[in-house]
Image (tube, rainbow, N blue to C red):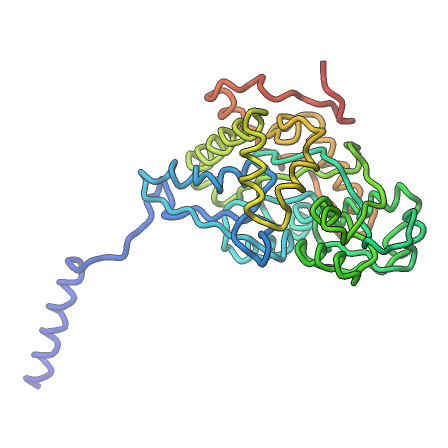
Length: 357
């Protein structure tokens, strides 16, 4: 009995000491311990780099790391070889807070119940280039009917391909459409394992392993918008953090929009190696940086998002309706533009992609 009493006394004493022991670090209610951001892409061989957007510039400049260093908030980046579908899966499993997405995976995720808010535009316009192996005898898209076309399924590239095919009187059913990641697409063209694809072609062409079948220099109805979003749960809990993230990326969008930075920007982006410096130079040479990099939610952005939703349903790529209303949250962008005195820096475009006067 005495032994039992002694054991109970020891246990009670130990319990009274527990509050004095070191406790696990807890996140401040006003800020998280880390910010988790996903790219729906990865560089060659899955390297943790991306290019072609203000978010990519933000990452390469370590701008968010610098912004949140004083708060001891860690920035964690994820680069998904599986592109948009992989990003959707990450978010569904509560592994990320923010992400960059093309239009198709963004809409597919929304249609399956993923809850996020669009807080920043990432890209628009640009050329579309359809490429075939160097020894291909094809002269037109019709010559490839029944042959293998590569695309990364579930991504904006698939929706762009569907638009291009439809414009030429075809659907995916007229071809053998094979799903490959971005780097493998280029390799498959070089080896002749596929008969065509929409890719940045200039490095392949310069090496003599591919040739351009046709290209569309600028068609706002065919190209996709890209987007930056935040999970609704994170946004409700940490609105001040969301604002700082957006403001930081808008600063980098300004840097990425300045023509004096063009060469430096192309060199920076090409570090991801899937698309080379030559690819970026040639693909962007006829475009103003300020038009391609625009973060705005102008008429063109909203109309393009709605059009993509309608097309995604028409092409039977989603089963459930997606309501655009309430999806875009412009206040963070508007605050950033006002704080940085950039309200009139980027031009606005109408629903058809024409410059507003």
